[in-house]
Image 1: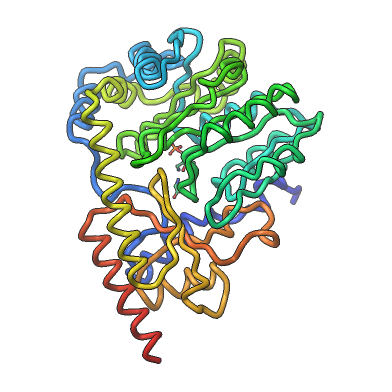
Image 2: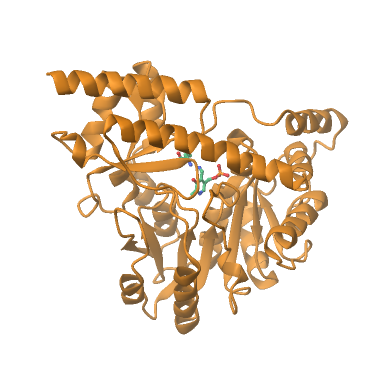
Length: 392
Ligand code: PMP
Ligand code: GLN
């Protein structure tokens, strides 16, 4: 048999799918994969259902329903003061994953380098490689996960076409500071490079932090592709509605990729998300407050049990350094044992590095976008497991 594409043939299933399957098999509480364990806001679901019954249900416009493109433009203005043309500067996609794929395919060519800050969300590396380009990893500094500006400067070359910036960052929960974003902006200008800004957690941002889109910094409007996701902003991860904001020259070429990746996104979901983006401030503050409470519930509980919890400024996730638990093995072995012995699933951070040899092996990611009683049960299980270990 002829060989298939080596980028994809060489990949396993994602760590999220693997850990979720193990959690199911062992009846473990799943604090691994990042998805809320409720059905999401009722009003959005009702609007999507009404829209399905009323129509349209045939192919919507390739760039997205006008209502959603207008809502994305208005959202940019309302939250960040960005003036965006809904017809020329917005593209609707089937989730942020498609938005990232379209963007990387549209911007990268063989010979290009794309800088990826690690630990990194798992789709960046394979898509960059599938586009024929080379991912260049730069490691964020553990345990706070800050940006190493010197290492980033050293990674830029004349071949650097773009940098992927994910803030708030999955898996670390790190929110980039204005100082870091300014340093990034300087480098992008010096090397005439683009930034792919994965901002899917823009509304999951906690006290003491604020989300600054890189695109709002001077000189960055034309260089940034800003990606959002209704999955995260409305706790509806299965809907897969994403949106891109970028200058017309970038949107035009990204839309060329989009027209052959999915072409369009279900119109009923687009209509519901268009309504959702226009909700009162109370919705957005409520979401962030609720998630912050859950972060605190899980973080405080884990700390009590003996985990070394790193502060999370945003996202669905917090990371813990497991060194203090005295476990004999790496993060992957730890997570597997946690599923079978404690009945709780979490994700090893080393899975978020392109080269596992250079990855730290002492951090684990827990997801807190779950019902409070689920988080409490998980903490009970972990406490019990730790007490047994200490007694042994
Ligand atoms: N980027 C990051 C950092 C994510 O955590 C996710 C969530 N899976 C995505 C992109 C993909 O979002 P979507 O489900 O909208 O494709
Ligand atoms: N973004 C989710 C996470 O980090 C996973 C999405 C997926 O399974 N692809 O947990």
